Length: 155
Image (cartoon, rainbow, N blue to C red; front, side, top):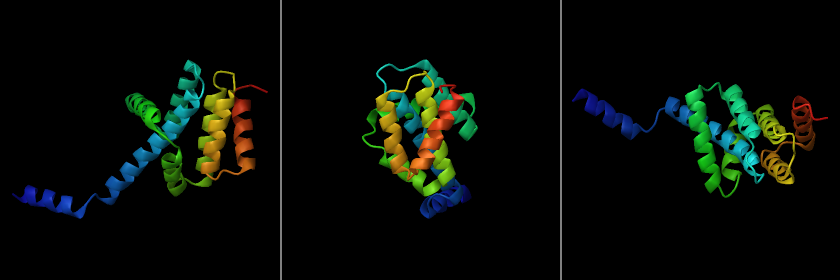
């Protein structure tokens, strides 16, 4: 009976701060993953090097296990298929990410774009649009692009 009352009060009080923080962290992971997947989807042919670049970026950024990474990637691909704009993903990032974290997302997007050693105009457009929505300055945008290009050894 005591457990029932405790559960009832918990439900009435709403989610705890820890639950909300965890939910926000998961939403930020998904938002980041969806934007990276959008770069991959910008080209007609899905390149395996781009997929690997997404997995590396997510693993590095969020310290996820292989199982968590696979689940996030699958969810991101499904979410990207039905997404009609980027605002719901970038809006959350604007609320919770610092400016350097947003620039890191743009750099990761460039890394995905350069992973197959070919920059498609559609990839460029997606990254440019997301950078604008994240309020990344032109200098930060170009810096992220140059770092990703250098890392990909495409000078």
